[in-house]
Amino acid sequence: MIRGTRSGARADPMAALGTARRVVADLKDGLSGPGARRAAHRLRRLLGVRGLGLADLSGTLSWSGRGTDEEATASLIEQVLQGETTRDRPPLMAVPVHANDGLAGVLVLSGLVRRSSAHEAAAWVADAVERGRLEASADRAEQAELRALRAEISPHFVYNALTVISSLMRSEPDRAGELMLDFADYTRYSLARRGDYTMLTDEFHAIETYLALQRAVLGDRLRVQVRVAPEVLGVAVPYLVLQPLVENAIRHGIEPRAGAGLVQVTGEAVGNDCVISVEDDGLGMDPAKAKAVLAGRGATDSVGLANVDRRLRHVYGPWYGLVVETEVDAGTRVLVRVPRFQPGVMP
Image (tube, rainbow, N blue to C red; front, side, top):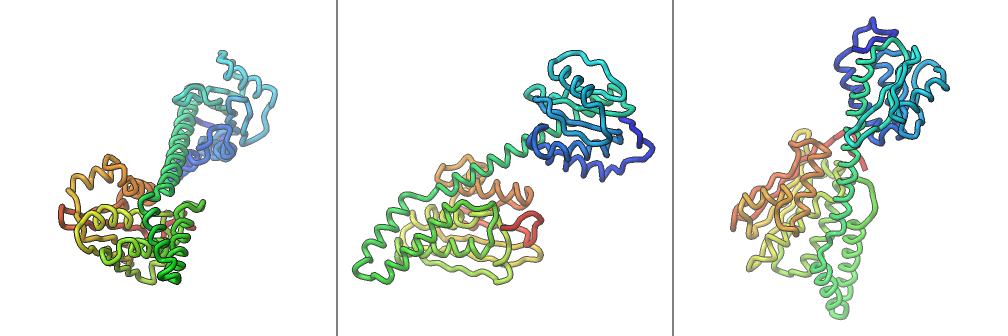
């Protein structure tokens, strides 16, 4: 236990947990990141010491609390970074912060603190640094997945769409012009550099342009129904979550089957949630195969489903991933459920 000048007050466990979560966020860029000083301030208050500092591997110190002897502090930090045995300079104490990949920095404490307790605090800081790194790494991986998803425009679809537009240039120039505008909207939305979130109205507009192009390519083989309740159009959702579902319905459900097929897309409010359904009456699949696809072990041309499922779970929690209902020769329905209002989710 660490005791400082304010050790008489008993910490609120819930407040301590909240502080711990915020410190992890502060240290996502390590002890040299912009949040290091905030983390030092939160830790000082949590531990009840007079002063607390976090130094990175260059010796740069983020300090919170009463002023301290800068020369003595710098000397202690340098000793720790050089791997030397330090001699405490009351009221100062410096201990190393070891993350998984080695020395991450130095924790400096000012106040009445036992060395064993200081090492416990350093271990906690190290854990926060490592958790922050993992979360930052997960965020970077998610951004990479989103970039990959944006780049997944099927060359086959692009070729067919442009071929159809070209064939209509003379016979139906007005329709060809409309389809070219749809194609421009489709590619602009799919490839645009934008934030993590968008409005549901934009997602539905994107799939409507995509479906217009697919109807031109497939003709009477594709029938489409799109119904969305007005009250959910303003719901903010992760960018590009619907189009991959519609594209999979056509590519794997309608295109391979003989005869015409139907794709239905609906969106409605159910209590505090928004429920979106993408359904086709195509070939369907074995439920075990659908489970493998969502786990990222399916065919590479279905990677969009796994991508969407992971992003939904990351943003809203594990209970908000995709639900796939399917059987061989019985079509497929993919359900998306998201909160109508979620803190931090906004375009």
